[in-house]
Image 1 (cartoon, helix red, strand yellow):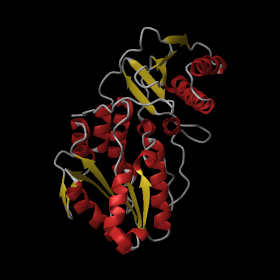
Image 2 (image 1 turned 180 degrees about the vertical axis):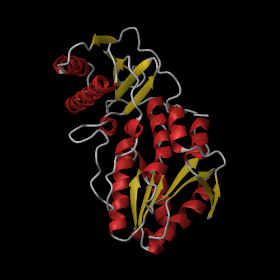
Image 3 (image 1 turned 135 degrees about the vertical axis):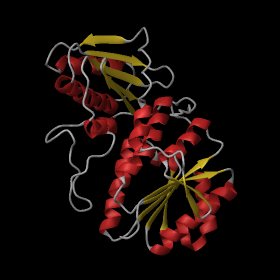
Length: 335
């Protein structure tokens, strides 16, 4: 297809601004035979349906809270849709308004990073993505939108964002601050045995005592096993497992530290690995045949934070129980 990939932000002060940008985008896609998705809060979706009239029949409507439930899974799902649309000779077009409120700070940061890495993951596709951002959002969220989207839209006019950053530069800034130290009541275990049985027993017991559902406990164990395996392969002793519960949002936190510096191959699993070949070809695994990979670790956890350097490597896994209400969203400014 001749259409090239676009990823634009739609800043808006009110519904007039919102509709002036969203309606032409959606109507153009419906008229062109694109696969068109409108991912919005419920009220905005109802407003769009009313304004679109008959054109709404050619558009798939989704609610933001369910769609934007997990950054890695959402990114992978959208890439699958882009591949499927291309096989049909169509373009994928998404109006996507992420929900920022009610997320703990680490998750806000991962969604901001995902917005940046969309520009890497979708490069070479014909996908068109328009992301509305209300100017009433926290200042750090609004500022980051100009760094993660190459262009801004007002009405039907798109202009370059002078503050746009290379996605990998933005991602590096997300990891620029040291992680806060574990709390005094965190529990630790030295990982001095090659057998992972004791790791799984220890982590599983803590997660169950902390109230994680059985499915989440299993996800944590698989993710922690993969991280420790990476530490054995790429790190250096001593290695330590530390666990605690974050009182701010109820997340169970599992941290693995070692004294080595991990290589930055494949961006530490930040982008879905894709095998070369025609659209829709099976995605490979950056960690090699039979390996689980850090990308899949990100699929399993609410957030994954990695710091690596001369002082060693820390990988922090977070699983937030879905039944526990999150705190107020905290803006993260990566300036």
